[in-house]
Image (cartoon, rainbow, N blue to C red; front, side, top):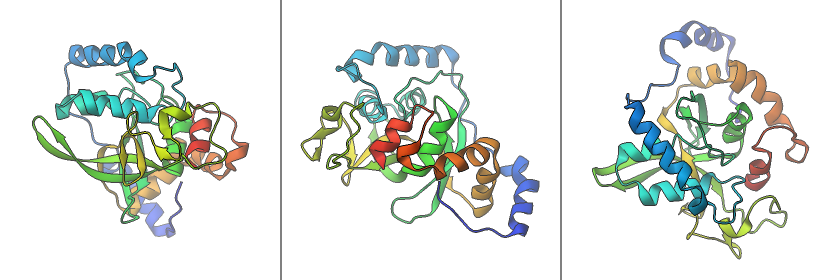
Length: 240
């Protein structure tokens, strides 16, 4: 997780204000039957998304499938909540997101938003190992700008994690764009929902939160090769 310097006054402001404006925005209400049907579609597409059967760090494959098959913005955003960009696990439609921040790839500014994940260590890993790019995507109901989680091209890594299907990500040392979506030689792994440029107060609140602060701080200070625990350990070695 990126470090920012704050004064004691700032931290005091955060504690007082967090109940007012620091919680993640609520997504627009959707019909439970619509969400259930879309979730079932994603489950039934598992073999198409992972023909090798290996879904380790498979967020990039989920994203590619959804981008290519769901051309309505609302459906695309709903579907993007149903998998963990870090682990490649399915995420229950009733799951509540974590409020996180990730640095913008261009400006370096913190971008806050809702992150849907399978387990808490993935919230730490997404903040530590990714950046976001704002991309203009085309949908049947018009273009939309979306903040996307990205990792750098891992295909030249001499220590590419053996638990991951390398061919799903790579064609030699190039990104295999038949299987994953790339922007400027970065691989897209998912969507940061309800995203906005956050204030230092909001970043500080995330750092004080029980999960994104208390639990993530020791995890994100642990050397990559010493991580033990969490489905994101493999992903961290991919993105490092």
